[in-house]
Amino acid sequence: MSTQTVSTSAAFEVTVTTTPAEPCTLLRSRGPMPAVDVTVTTTCRLCSASHAHSGTGILRDMWEILLPKLEHTLWLKPGQEWVEAHAGECPLRPLLVEQYLTVGGATVDIKVVPESGSAAAECGGCPSTMAIDLPYISGDIESARRWAQAHAEKCRALPKPEVSR
Image 1 (cartoon, rainbow, N blue to C red):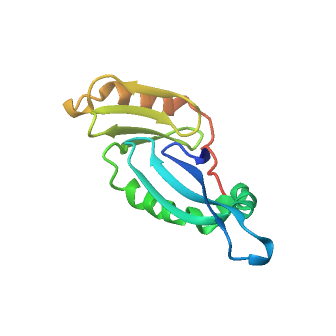
Image 2: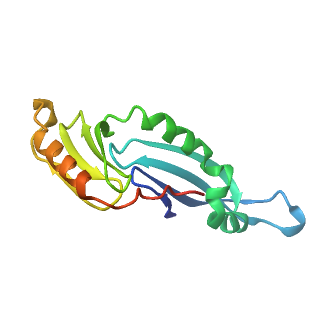
Image 3: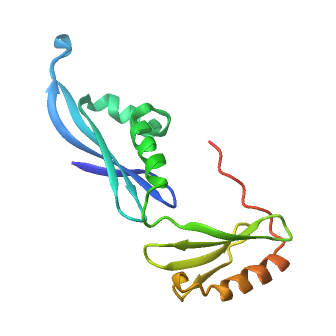
């Protein structure tokens, strides 16, 4: 059995686990051919919820050719559909509560996580961030507002480019 991480993002990770399967005998002229069972698991990095789908009896040689190109195949589609659905319902997803426009055109976002009561301010142009120690539930995020406003007034970084495929 082998497990390999094939894709990661800030919120999700995709792993592929292969285990040996019964040899394939469909092509009788070539004799038994090694096969594998494949399980693709997509896991939320925030709440650890996961979705798995699998295929059985896949020719090992074909799988080894396909694996490096996995992101461009339909193998990841069920996981991507789950990601889209889960992103809106994850109990630990950060919720955007305020934004401040920087001089450079980026935004400083204040986000909270209702389940944990944590909050953070993050610049979308530079790497500056501020963790809020007080639970946002108390309604006291004034320190984050002051930091976000002060940072927005001086940060000249352009918005981080969107990653395109």
